[in-house]
Image 1: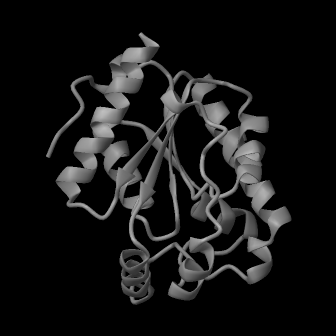
Image 2 (image 1 turned 30 degrees about the vertical axis):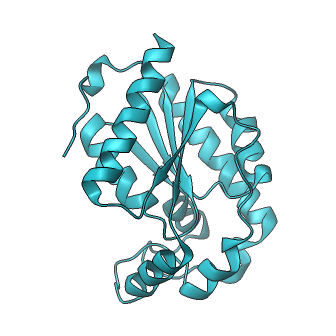
Length: 196
């Protein structure tokens, strides 16, 4: 498996947003990147459960997925990511970022605290549904995205068109772990080269 060629201590502060449709492997990839780069992860699933005052493995009521609640969650993600950057470290944000409105809520509170690389995980619908179905059997799963939610949200994804081309990349998350992590490392290294 490919590893980064620079240890975390030598990385400039930046924010890695790992986004994409539900069940596309974001959290798995975020955990791998956190271990490889030595960065903290801010997860929308965990922040949502924390603000709802429920355990991570509990299912949040539907009201916690309303548009106003989603906006509050993304604003909180932006605040926490900015605070991490101000402490002098990079950070990984793990969330769908599926609408432009969500991304704007994040940007408003993040305030350009550091350069941001958006990495969009994508996979065919049948792969996402299979993953969501398997995840339902895991009592420790934090995600509330059932196969029904995954199917409903699939066509609601809004492309990252407002993000500059050099600040976003797409990864085929249906590939093997080695393929996916190799793509991620290459994208990060290219991004960091641009930052100088």
